[in-house]
Amino acid sequence: VQLVESGGGLVQAGGSLSLSCAASGRTFGPAVMGWFRQAPGKEREFIASITWLGGRPYVSDSVKGRFTISRDNAKNTVYLQMNSLKPEDTAVYYCAAARGRLNVIVDRTSQYDVWGQGTQVTVSS
Image 1 (tube, rainbow, N blue to C red):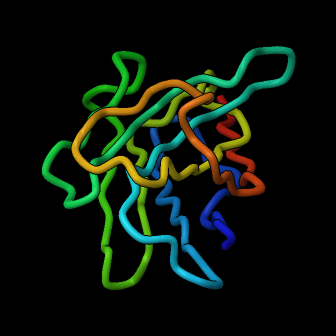
Image 2 (tube, rainbow, N blue to C red; image 1 turned 120 degrees about the horizontal axis):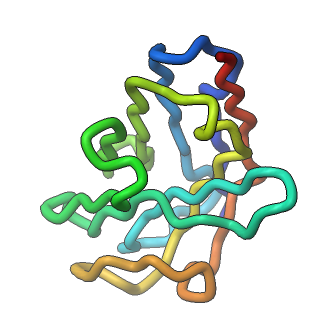
C-alpha cells in the first residue's frame, strides 16, 4: 500500500494549486484521510481531514476559507484544493491514511499509519 502525492509546485501569492493523493497497490479499505504540511525547521502541521464517506470534511483554522479537502473513493484519491495561497503556506505537503477509522476527524500524526512521500509547495511573494 502506497500513497503518492502530486500537484505541488511554485505559485505566486494569491494563486491556487490542487494536490492529489492516490492510493496504489493493494487497497487498504475504509480510512480517514488527512493532509499535513511541514515547513523547514517546523513541526508537521495538521491541515485537513475527511471521513471515509466524505460527509465530514474538516480544515484547520489556519487554512479555513482557503483550502478544501475532498475524496473520490472510486478512484482511491483524496484532494486538497488550495486557493488564495500565501507565502506562509510554503511547505512540504503530505497525505496520510488512518486505516480502520470511518467517521471521525483525525488530527494527530500518531493516529495515521500510512504516509505519502510529500510534495513541495512554494508560494512566492
